[in-house]
Length: 318
Image (cartoon, rainbow, N blue to C red; front, side, top):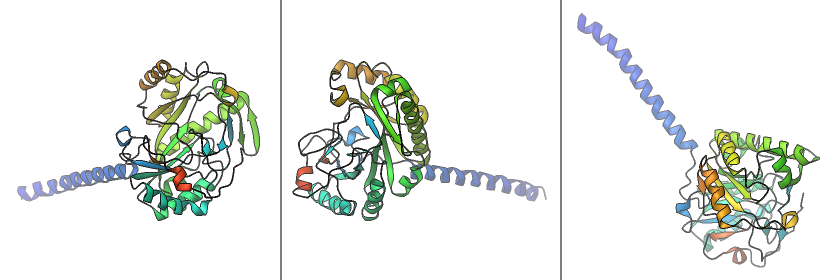
């Protein structure tokens, strides 16, 4: 009788332990499913840099903010963000991905980073929908200023997007107003510190929502001497609290309204990275890639061969 009572006491305990183990396994599996595999992403993982390729689809025709350093253009010469030969029609996106893979089988990432903002229009969303259906194994990546990111992270996740880059150049309205001349939100133009407050609130909320959804977030910061070089640590700390996991300092290209501000020196860049690294891992392999870049970073750029004589439209500056 004593043995039977003892056995009856052990059974519930055994079931409890089994349930705990099953719950732990389920939690670990869910974490693995929600955590993006960036080992083959050259823009998130330095070890993949120079080995794996990326393709930028120049899908997005419009922008919803105007940065004082940004001069978007359509040409085949300049090697910098915001530039592409033209706008790729959505219906040609899948075909271009196929041709890019023929030119560079090492491509593991399909990204949309311009020439306008990826979320300022519907073009990127629809392109990802088609590309993910045709090439589900490729990493889908999106770059945005973050103004229109809140409320879209569930949709992006469903379309296969697992990595997002948000450009955050300031975390106080005054500094933001020195970087951004105006924003366009819900049909209204905002300027000055009011624009900075709206933009920053949307950026942080979007980063938080993306992180909670299982999308890895990298934050790009354009280092602008005399404007935001003193607050890189504040930026890194703030975006980390919101959920970002990687920080990338990009040196200013002096142009447009900030053409008279010199590009940061190597010493200034290194100091900025050291300031940011206190709070957030720094990515140190970034290039000034075009919005239609194709190939392995640091090797032959294949965008001219990919697009060839293809006729492409110009875009709206928003």
